[in-house]
Amino acid sequence: MLSHNQIKFINSLKIKKFRQQHQAFIVEGEKGVSELLAGTLPVVTIFAHQEWLDRNNFLLTSKNIEYQLITADELKKVSDLATPNQVLAIAGIPQAGLSQPEAYTGMILALDGIRDPGNMGTIIRTADWFGISRIVCSSDSVDMYNPKVVQSTMGSFGRVKVSYVNLLNFFNGLPSGTPVFGALLDGPDITQKTFTRPGIILIGSESNGISHSLMPFINEPLFIPRFPAFGETHQAESLNASIANGIICYEICKQLSKNIF
Image (cartoon, rainbow, N blue to C red; front, top):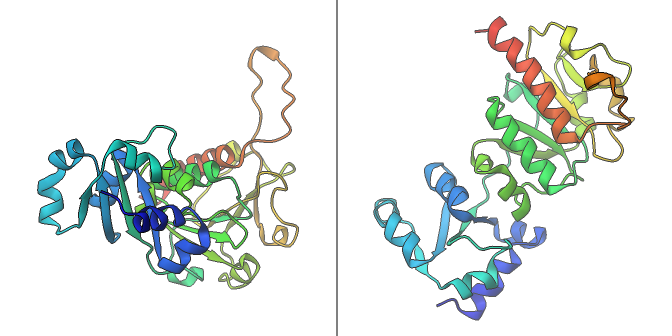
């Protein structure tokens, strides 16, 4: 049975300052918890229905993971989902990762003011799909351990390292000649470019795009062209940040997989 203090603690982790204070976050649902158990992040406690515990008892016991049986009504009191899904875990937040690119030579995503949890989660999931394991975010981007972000990653939260940095300082510290890719309306067609080296993909905020202070660092501008179907005229001014990120990652990683490997 969940105590009042346990309910209060779990619900407090839905707020950023308490996640930072306790260095812990919530993972909900069978998919997310399964990915958590398969990964390397520390698992503090699991709260689950009897059915889930019966299916996963051997794994929990073999990994010496603390768990507690709870009812459906108890799960509703702490769940952030419209329809709670059998299990909720408390996981430990890992130490901060990349601060400067000298520490890593692969492809890196730089997120400038991404505030929508769904977009952030989708971007993390997309990075994981294309084998991009490092993301740096501006300090005003949404916290990756926000429950809605974690849920949107569909388990990728444990495989992609996300750091929060001063992006201006980060770009100023780039080694000379590092490719910095950014989607601009006046850039060359991304489908006509040749990519031979990994670098930094800079994605701007949903409402304001890439910050003016970061524009000078883009030395590989890109334009995502429209291909109107059936001659129709489309009026959308821009693409969603996570969609633009997916298109850019696809084109660059597709070419690099052929040119490098």
